[in-house]
Image (cartoon, rainbow, N blue to C red; front, side, top):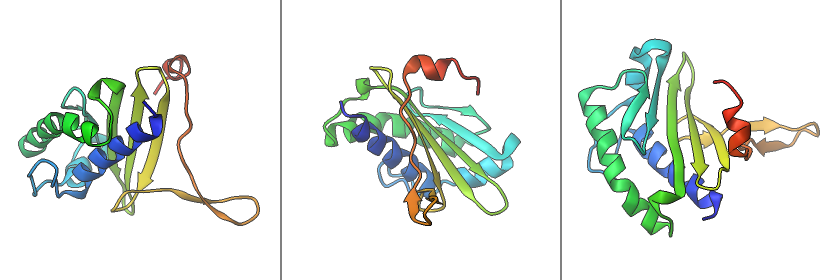
Length: 154
């Protein structure tokens, strides 16, 4: 499976939860960024494959929504021509500070390729940077092999 398709699926599901309007699962009142603001470190990290919050505190409503996203994930994968088995890791880390809502999506496929994409704002968009010639570019995550990621802490 192409890693770009898996990244698109991951962004779609993470953005759906982050938007607060989960059309995919039929839950329309959740605020993951509001809950992140109340959590230690102002962070909530979600493992969509395990259907649980792995960092921060999730309310009952958010925990229920996370489980529903896990149930909806195979259908979303099928629509994109993928399978849930193509993912080895699918996490989203929602954080908030005084000015910015930030989303970091990590995807690892079964071959070992790993992408970490960072998004800001609502809707979640890639960060824009200016290159040395003054052109605005989209900052995208880089692919890493599984052994490269596992050797790094944090």
